[in-house]
Length: 82
Image (cartoon, rainbow, N blue to C red; front, top):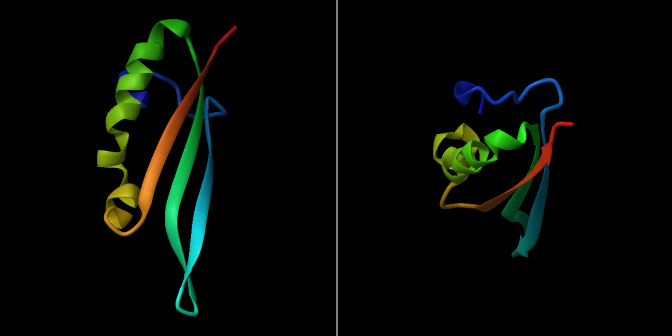
């Protein structure tokens, strides 16, 4: 986002992650993770933010590390700056 001039620090971008755990034998295993992003931005930048969100997992070290082992999904909620 910041590489495209969209502020992401200082409370502009926040996230919550929820993991779904299943039992495999006698061991708990993380099967799915959903990350919900919330972004405060100028309304004119919404299309740019949606485009960045569409490919960000390909450049995220965590997503790339666990890809293929844990299903990851993300969503993006946007709030216009007043």
